Length: 93
Image (cartoon, rainbow, N blue to C red; front, side, top):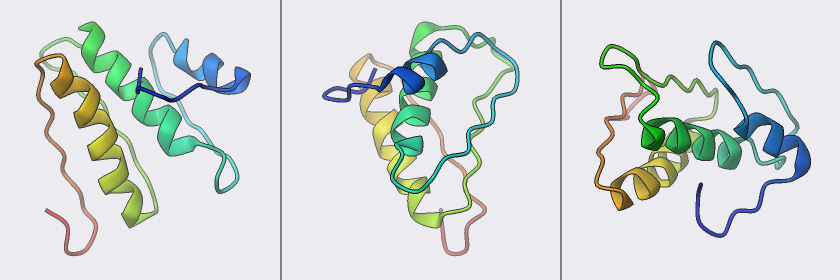
Protein backbone atom coordinates (compact mmCIF):
# COMPACT_ATOMS: atom_id res chain seq x y z
CA UNK A 1 0.00 0.00 0.00
CA UNK A 2 1.12 3.58 -0.55
CA UNK A 3 2.86 4.99 2.53
CA UNK A 4 0.94 7.56 4.60
CA UNK A 5 -2.34 6.80 2.85
CA UNK A 6 -5.16 5.55 5.04
CA UNK A 7 -8.12 4.40 2.94
CA UNK A 8 -11.67 5.13 4.02
CA UNK A 9 -14.04 2.14 4.47
CA UNK A 10 -15.42 2.37 0.92
CA UNK A 11 -11.86 2.52 -0.42
CA UNK A 12 -10.87 -0.50 1.67
CA UNK A 13 -13.51 -2.47 -0.23
CA UNK A 14 -11.75 -1.59 -3.48
CA UNK A 15 -8.44 -2.86 -2.08
CA UNK A 16 -10.13 -6.26 -1.55
CA UNK A 17 -10.51 -6.57 -5.33
CA UNK A 18 -10.03 -10.20 -6.41
CA UNK A 19 -9.88 -10.06 -10.22
CA UNK A 20 -11.83 -9.21 -13.35
CA UNK A 21 -12.87 -5.81 -14.56
CA UNK A 22 -13.31 -2.98 -12.11
CA UNK A 23 -14.78 0.46 -12.70
CA UNK A 24 -14.73 3.31 -10.22
CA UNK A 25 -16.68 6.54 -10.57
CA UNK A 26 -16.64 9.23 -7.90
CA UNK A 27 -16.71 12.98 -7.48
CA UNK A 28 -13.52 15.05 -7.85
CA UNK A 29 -11.35 14.87 -4.75
CA UNK A 30 -12.78 11.53 -3.59
CA UNK A 31 -9.41 9.77 -3.76
CA UNK A 32 -9.79 7.79 -7.01
CA UNK A 33 -6.17 8.31 -8.03
CA UNK A 34 -4.90 7.36 -4.58
CA UNK A 35 -6.96 4.20 -4.29
CA UNK A 36 -6.39 3.01 -7.86
CA UNK A 37 -2.65 3.64 -7.49
CA UNK A 38 -2.65 1.65 -4.25
CA UNK A 39 -4.62 -1.17 -5.88
CA UNK A 40 -2.34 -1.31 -8.94
CA UNK A 41 0.78 -1.33 -6.78
CA UNK A 42 -0.75 -4.03 -4.57
CA UNK A 43 -1.58 -6.23 -7.57
CA UNK A 44 1.87 -5.77 -9.13
CA UNK A 45 3.77 -6.24 -5.87
CA UNK A 46 1.79 -9.33 -4.84
CA UNK A 47 2.91 -11.23 -7.93
CA UNK A 48 -0.72 -11.95 -8.83
CA UNK A 49 -0.14 -11.12 -12.51
CA UNK A 50 0.86 -13.81 -14.99
CA UNK A 51 3.55 -12.97 -17.58
CA UNK A 52 0.90 -12.16 -20.19
CA UNK A 53 -1.19 -9.94 -17.89
CA UNK A 54 -1.09 -6.19 -17.37
CA UNK A 55 -2.79 -3.58 -15.24
CA UNK A 56 -4.72 -1.04 -17.30
CA UNK A 57 -5.82 2.26 -15.78
CA UNK A 58 -7.85 4.58 -17.97
CA UNK A 59 -8.28 8.19 -16.98
CA UNK A 60 -9.81 11.15 -18.76
CA UNK A 61 -7.55 13.62 -16.97
CA UNK A 62 -4.03 14.06 -18.39
CA UNK A 63 -2.57 15.20 -15.07
CA UNK A 64 -3.64 11.92 -13.46
CA UNK A 65 -1.22 9.98 -15.69
CA UNK A 66 1.81 11.46 -13.93
CA UNK A 67 0.20 10.98 -10.52
CA UNK A 68 -0.56 7.31 -11.21
CA UNK A 69 2.92 6.67 -12.54
CA UNK A 70 4.71 8.35 -9.62
CA UNK A 71 2.61 6.67 -6.92
CA UNK A 72 2.74 3.18 -8.40
CA UNK A 73 6.42 3.45 -9.30
CA UNK A 74 7.31 4.57 -5.76
CA UNK A 75 5.77 1.44 -4.24
CA UNK A 76 6.85 -1.07 -6.88
CA UNK A 77 10.45 0.17 -7.12
CA UNK A 78 10.77 0.18 -3.32
CA UNK A 79 10.32 -3.59 -3.57
CA UNK A 80 12.78 -4.03 -6.46
CA UNK A 81 10.23 -4.08 -9.29
CA UNK A 82 9.83 -1.95 -12.39
CA UNK A 83 6.82 -0.58 -14.26
CA UNK A 84 6.28 0.71 -17.77
CA UNK A 85 3.72 3.43 -18.49
CA UNK A 86 2.22 4.26 -21.85
CA UNK A 87 -0.09 7.17 -22.46
CA UNK A 88 -2.19 8.25 -25.41
CA UNK A 89 -2.46 11.77 -24.00
CA UNK A 90 -1.24 14.50 -26.32
CA UNK A 91 2.40 15.27 -25.75
CA UNK A 92 2.94 12.45 -23.26
CA UNK A 93 5.79 9.92 -23.42
